Length: 262
Image (cartoon, rainbow, N blue to C red; front, side, top):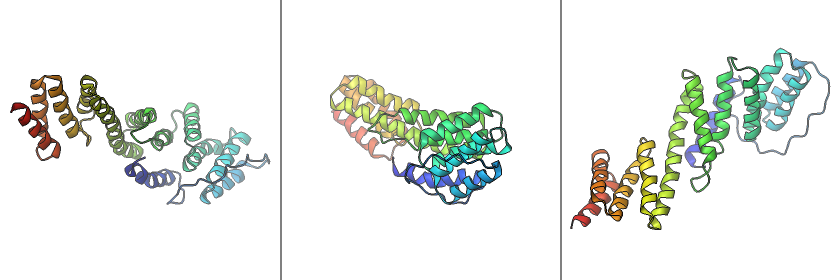
């Protein structure tokens, strides 16, 4: 994961924690696997308080088990619904993202109209987001993160979680564009110019606000010249010059067009 993605994690944990009135400044916890909570019959409030105390101590995996126990022992109590969300958060804080997603999805299936539904969607989106890998690897998780963020923004556009999701969508798009560029360069290296140009065109058309567009336009100039269609190269160069006149990619594109004309 890139530094930009890593840097957002502490702020995200804080936002998630504040929504549940937790102590701020949560950190990563890669502790040992939590033991299964032994069944001891306790009233819901006592069990919930124990789970919260365990969470405040940053024993996230154990806390998740205890919150699950609240629901198991008292499924119809007022504490059970809150415990479901707290369990999802605890799994997220423990970096058990699959469990966090399942817990949040279960909450939504049981309480789709609940006021905390935006929060549950946010946990799902962030659990995918935290798993985004570098551009050399498969980007299926990246697309799932984008889909989940877009769903959050679509459903709850005025929520504070949607505001954060919009910022992260920009990073996700930049990441996906970077993957397209990597594939395009691979094709170009092997002189597969049509396949390369398709990838570069996708960046220009689908990821217009990302940092990869200037290079994509230059690579289109390069690809079109290699394919023997200078008119298309000229169009790409014109767009590059009009939108990014001070970039190194425009300078390279200009020189390439001059060499071809000469």
